[in-house]
Image (cartoon, rainbow, N blue to C red; front, side, top):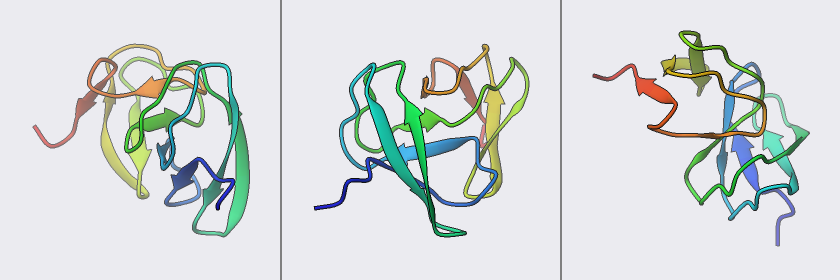
Length: 94
């Protein structure tokens, strides 16, 4: 069983994706797939599988990066360890 709780697709991404349930206050380990190395972060919120965890602080209006691509803009300040979802991210798709 893997000890990693989230995946980061590319070095420089703002967010990782939970592959296991993450509890608020938990310090979790993730893996950055390119290049292959670990990262640890303390979660500020409960984060469900498939949802995003912020790897660094992002100010309102700044871009959020996932897969090495711009996926949207922060609609409010996001702190490292925050749950990132529709409440604080405006998708670049719409």
